[in-house]
Length: 312
Image (cartoon, rainbow, N blue to C red; front, side):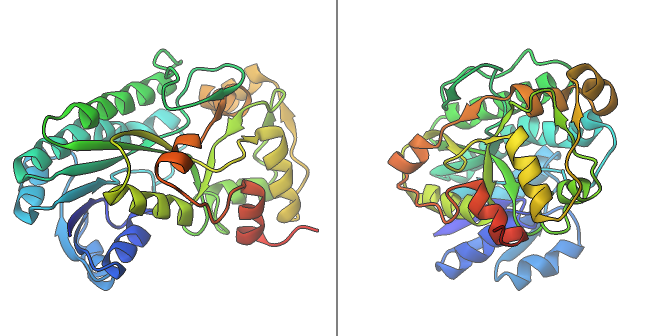
């Protein structure tokens, strides 16, 4: 099968391209920079340099490749920024306008199916578990609402493009090699430095997913399952008041401090309050039932031990 991976050198893109090639697919993968060409070639795929914010470049790359399936993994999250809104700005454009360009090009190329990355951490605050039909936090404050609206616009395009089977993959927070929650990642380093506090009561329920399981779920969705939205998350939503101290102990780091909501919003941004104390749990029931997913790391506890070391 001919598969086009948009964003083939990212945290998910690299192992996904490698796995697709290993399964015998003819893979074309995009990169935004010349240095990524060798990376893609090393994975066994055909490279193409493509700026996801350039509609004509997206059209040219996808139409030329004539893929049967397109997997959109485009983000721009590798360069850290002290300002959350600035850090998300390019990704927001890729989720909205970039996704629209991918869908238009895929339809023109005759692709039968498109899988597109989104997030499982965008639902309205509340108690209890949420699923793929739960309302999104479209009116969230500041950069939260901007990000959710951009992602929702992209999701809508994926699901409504005529003639194309659209699948939205709402990944949880990635952990594992190469991620912010990897051995040398920003979040792990913040925990080591005692700089990742618990906000308020720490009641935010983080949806985590190991990168290996994220790739495995994506592979299943390439040619299985119904069109629609899937939460790609593990079995146990992680309460901030539990996972941050757990990771601190694994890393032999200082005991995390606590910060009231107003102080956290002022010091770190409104997103820390939403994720840390208000984010509801996300269910993976559809992933398991419809795609038949069998998670290698069904809980973040087991996954964290595998990534960071065993806790007695």
